[in-house]
Length: 459
Image 1 (tube, rainbow, N blue to C red):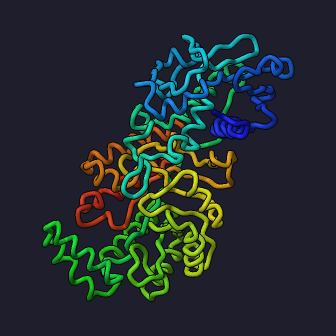
Image 2: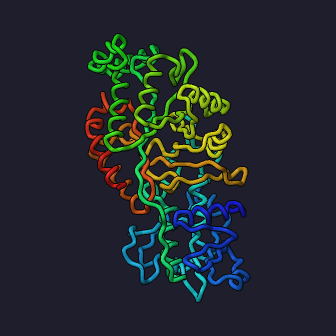
Image 3: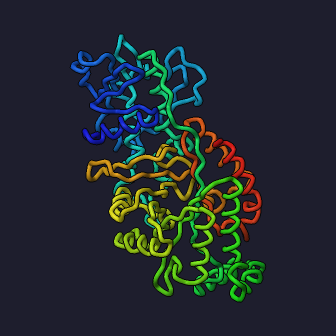
């Protein structure tokens, strides 16, 4: 399964989480050099290094078998089965095994002299999850062209609540410490990252979007919303419901000394399906407001960009012209991403990072990690100079797709945030400015308290 480039990439990803530098097929723990070997080429390495770490490689067809749904379930090991004997207090009480080595033994790992052998292929597992192996040219797409959660390994094997790559790295840490006698202190700490997609900057502008909102109010039988929203066309923009809620998000950020990211759509056509002209007076006022309050601005790449990659250059330039600074990050409208094509198209347009990788249908760890990480293009067999910041929770996943109550939604948010905290990763959450009022009124009322709690966790 793994090319030499993929092997090097996967080693670097595991060690990056531990704060260790992987070079020339080795790492240094304390002042002790450890040679890193994947597969069965360990004999020569053992003579040239003080210590050796060997990971047994899984069968070449194992990743494709997993994509096809084989095996039916994963082995789950208890701590006594996957940790060195003297280790206690590990933050997770079980460990799913994605890929065993060629000959699965009873032991997860063993130390013989100065050699540590892992009989579980955590290297292939990390690559499978981070490079999104299962998604490349998959036929399991929804009506928006998105890879379906129901088809995923995360859904089938119950991995959606686990940053499995980060957990494997923590397990590896315990074994490297047992091998070398040196303490490893990862440099990372838990962080909370909050961002917002501004699909509608105003309820009443542009006019055709206002008509769309009115039509949906009537179709849902929400005459109360219709009566509430109809006068917005005649109000000053500062009284607009969606603008006021955008301001509420800025105020929440300020109350927590945060500089949230606001992802803005761009539009040029009068009746564009998504976006809004950035040249209008009221929109320019909003841009000034965000900049004056030290909010970050990113590109919310349009729905059409999924099929028309040339739009990335156009939309990025349009946004930069409007805000007067370089745009570095992006998130896809409707989370429409195609692995690895979208990464390449964003990179080619000069973008540096993306925040799109979350299943719309379910919150959690789509990529098996809560760390920002450089991505790998399986088709070109190379690492890209582009970063994915995995999205862990999106508001609509909780209420619209999963039909959770505010209390249930907050419980899920906190469960996932505490999991990120256990691995010292980054908990990322998206909240739209349109998800504070109307049907979202109770969620919007509680959101400031939730954000304060999450912010306090990161300090």
